[in-house]
Length: 472
Image (tube, rainbow, N blue to C red):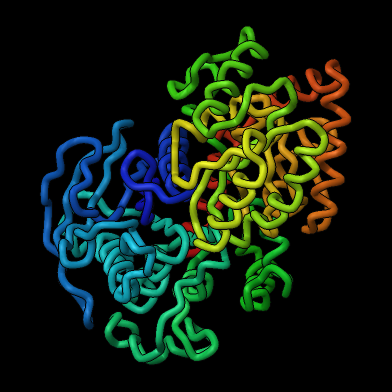
């Protein structure tokens, strides 16, 4: 099967979160099962990746979407990759979505409509390539419009739309409809209209042949008013029709304590010694004092969804019980200030790094005894899998993919309510295990034995692909 996989992020090229890791892993895993996978991504300015690129064709624009070139290359794994080359849209500083001052680019609708339109043009043979996909797989709101473009342009190529986080919908002013080359009929309840705005995510949900999301529990949660972000009715309809599937994300082979190049010492064997050496390296970097007690870690975007405020409130319990807390991440200014204040009030016991720091993140997960993940909702989550793989027992809110990947009392600790009290109670449960070295060692072994490889997930995606092609 020939599959065009489009995404706005790709690990090793450009990354702001877990989407990049998953976007690198899925094509690789499916290629190993025999699929002809090819990736489509914007050509962000000044970033080199994989093999040299060669322009292979020119694609026309539509409405206010400019024309672009298509360049071909390959990832370091040898997977063919097409770059949408349009410097006026993509050759900018900052992240794929925002400027260096963290403000969203005002033309993000056009920027990512260009990506989606390019995918539709490739699928329809307008790129004059010798290769055309049997299926298009779009990921999250930046790629969602391809499902609509395929329908609006009369294509018979089916599409898969994967929701990585429903809270990010890609909402834009309705006046932009024709600028994006979208027909007037699409601005309707049975279309992409959402509270008098254009919703890229709703377009993906409504027009895609099949919809997937990143864990079975999240697939159930988003059909409810609490988690459905106003789209729960449509999602419930998709679920009832057999068009919504939850497939738990997995983690790549590069996340392994045996071969992680970021660690001070790899393991196993000599797991405890290696974890202590990595913990001490973390302590030195974030100004924690030498300590024999448990180390709690959290690596996260500093946003409300991730329960940062709950973790800060629970830090008092950690410190009172003789533990230390390290937090690595960046995000909302108010939460960054609160994190810094906590560290200032608890010198030597709370350490923070306000940055996206890949090396420190790996070492903090490897060196910690426990990993905090009090997310209010978590579609899949990857860090709880990293933590278990590295022998750090996660303490997590029982939601989304956290439920699907943590065995309470065996490989980690789950708590039911997203409150500071519930988190504190779970921390006390973890500390009780810490006081029983044999029990902690048993849980650590069980966590490290967990299978989070992509093989089973790839088989599930393959089933959805075949279902989509059959129904097209």
